[in-house]
Length: 389
Image (tube, rainbow, N blue to C red):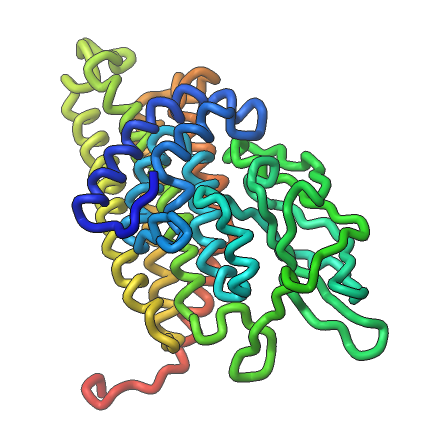
């Protein structure tokens, strides 16, 4: 699916396409988990739904969707398979983060396929040495989500010429030029295939060596002049987690009139006032998280247009991101309580949504104690306003 503009009517068409992909993703979620990689059927469904073209500029045949549209689509896809939604989110957040560092020549190469995908990792940085026409790099970069299928990878390296001090640079490399160590073996989000990229003296042409901009203090800062961009990435990944919670709600809701509460005379959960209240609380937590996700996306989308962002705004928005994560976790935990030990049967998708949610929410974007530490530090050192005295 491509378009020259994402108008309101197109957004609804895009959402309909995402909804049509959900049954395919759900049917293949177990296989994705076993293989630690998306099956071809899931990848094809995502491509057909336009998911991989969300961040592609219209001049290259993509959708260039705004942030609220992007998170709506990703959250919908997460109802079927959070790993699939996560991979869409990773590429959708990475492309606008790094495309501004690319030349027109490199952009044309990168977007030759409007459904292109980008994976990558930064830490630990690799080691690069300047040679005629480019850089030769070696390194290992773990947690590169989707690296077995994404055609492009972005990695961080310390690049030097043997004379002056080395400098940080991003390297844009076809994944076919790299090796992949299948190191991703986790309790959840297994289908993301977040394995380790490996380079052993790989040549990267100079055009694809992307120097880092510098911030006001002179230190390397890939988001110099774009301080809200990392928050845009955070809310994009958050959409996959909210989608996981919505998927769990779908599963639990489908059994409400079928499951019988243990050791009671109720015919089903829906007949139990306690079960109804428990389900209502879980529904409220998850549906309100979805609502506030879209509100937050619209707010961050507006902020990304500006060259500055106050520290207080940054920490406040981080706290709001984490609040939505916690709401989803609480809601899904209630659903597990409601469904009991059978929730953890290997063939019950409820436990996969739970595991995917809890592993995905441990991403660095959602570090709760550091978000709270930074926000509390600002509040403690802020001068009171005249009105507050």
